[in-house]
Image 1 (cartoon, rainbow, N blue to C red):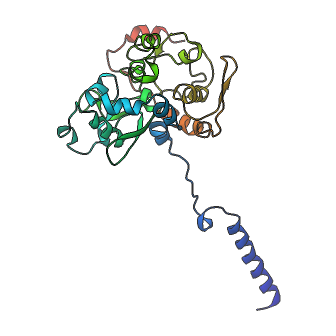
Image 2 (image 1 turned 180 degrees about the vertical axis):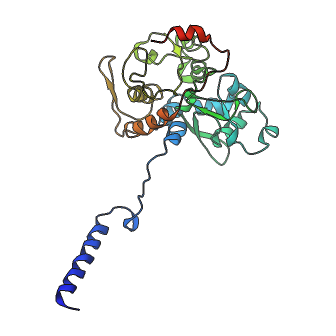
Length: 288
């Protein structure tokens, strides 16, 4: 082998070594941190809001003590039948809060994430986008069935649920929260103190929608960030001087996932409305 060939082989080996050394992934190949799954983010991501729902509102204790499955279904919480072990509903006590805790451990309660210890205690819990923006098809029984991501949970009574927290036992707060009713929520009440609830909207059919809300505040991701930080109380940064809001966490868990969340939302097409559920002639008159 001549000197020129040796030099070329050495250069090629050095280039390969440098390429491997500059690659942070294991063995110079696979990415150690795969991108988050959009559906998983929508269904299960809390953005760290356990600090609010557990440490401040103590909702884990409320659920553990008083929220059995019958009560949970009555206030609009939904159960994913596909997450349940076969036959479990025939063997558990639906009037026992411990059953609700077990359903949360199984990730079967839409929009509720929890940590359960070996003694069956709900030690921490938080909420996800799916709480308000998913429902089920009632295939098993009302409130229990297959997931319908993006559908508005018009049975959910968020005001009544939050009113169970010891944090909101002031009579004036109780009066407001319990007045909203099922399918209604005021995403500005904790900002301006004015009770003006609106219907919980769906999260499907957003592809091509420029502004998320009827007030035209901003894009879909603007509203996702607003709700995740100011309503779900996730750990994230959000600022809008128009409404006097500026939240800045040391660690922003919301902003890096906004694109992923939007990707899943835009993939959810609006369902076909049931036959005879609206006046087709009148609907046609509104077309431009």
